[in-house]
Structures are given as structure tokens and as C-alpha cells.
Image (cartoon, rainbow, N blue to C red; front, top):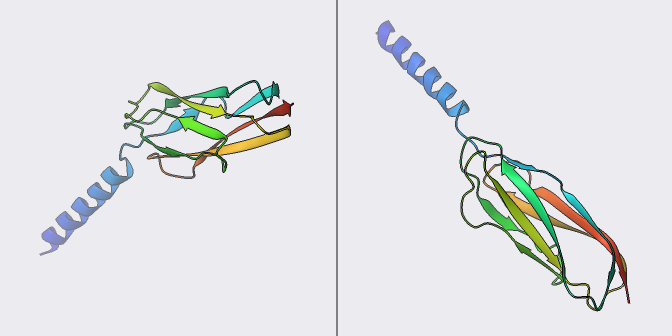
Length: 128
């Protein structure tokens, strides 16, 4: 009887250790902010590209990238998994048409890496 209890305890501890060492994805950005400087309102869309690397040990999935709260921002990102050690790009397209003055926007990146969403910011000044 004691032998069964010890075996069960050993098995449970082994499973907990294995689950704790579970493979996980991790995302690391080269930079998380971009300054467009001064742009013209009538100059057309501008884009900022944020390069990231999967620094984890499991495939990384970008689940979503928010649009920053306005229709002036459109994100594009990889829909396929990013293998461990590989890199990808998230591009944010911003349309300054009809806007002027200083701006600072933020988009949120949701992944399968767990933890909080990552923030990417971009800013600049729009002139007429």
C-alpha cells in the first residue's frame, strides 16, 4: 500500500515538473515605437513596420492587432505560426487625411505567448 502511494506521489510530481517546463512561445520586438516626424495631411498613408522574433520554444501565433481606436489605422501581420527563433513583421498603416496637429497612437498585439498584450506606438505631427 505504501509503495502505491509513493509511486502515485512520484508520478504526480513528475507530471507537474513536465507541465512547468512546457514549451511556450515568446515575442520580442526590436523596437516598439515609431516617430513619423512631420507628415502632410494630403500626403497619403504612411506605414511603420515593427520586427519581432519568437524567442520562445513553441510556434508563435499573432492572434490579433488592434486598430488603435480609429479607422485611420490599419494593421497587417502574419497569419501563419512563427517558428522558434524566426522573425516576422507587423506593419501599421496610418491615414492622416483630414487630421492635423500632433498625434500619438497605440495598437495592442495579442499572441499565444500568454501574459499581457504588447503595445506598439507611433507618433508625429500632421500639417495641412
